[in-house]
Image 1 (spheres, rainbow, N blue to C red):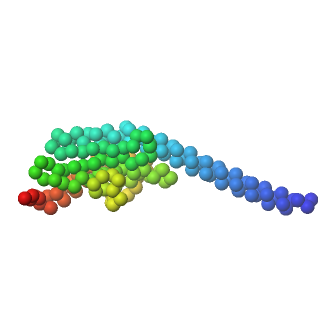
Image 2: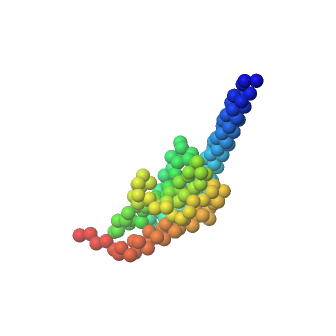
Image 3: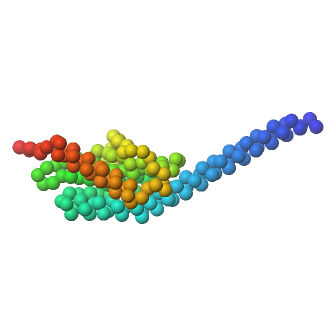
Length: 161
């Protein structure tokens, strides 16, 4: 009889901890599922769209490159755009799709130079994994390239002597 309150308190603690463990396991499972889905989307949607845009840039006399650490399924994937030509050098810029595994969201950002550049600018809102499709990837890539072209035109021709 002396241990009734103690047993009740310990039981509540055990129940609270079990509930916390179950919630953490649900979060872990959801993050794993989101990471698996992001890896699939990178391979089946983003990669092919970036490859098509890279080919289109090449056909127009410019260059593009795709960077993706294949060994890390949750790493960003980037399209690096270079609008330089023989007569006019240009800054390389990248469109990265970054995955936040904890939140299960993807964001698009723009980085000057390479994808390792610390200075990035977020392009719009974050998207749930289910929202990422070819249309959004094309739209963001076209938006970036159009912005780069506008900036190049506004800068005017660079004269090298």
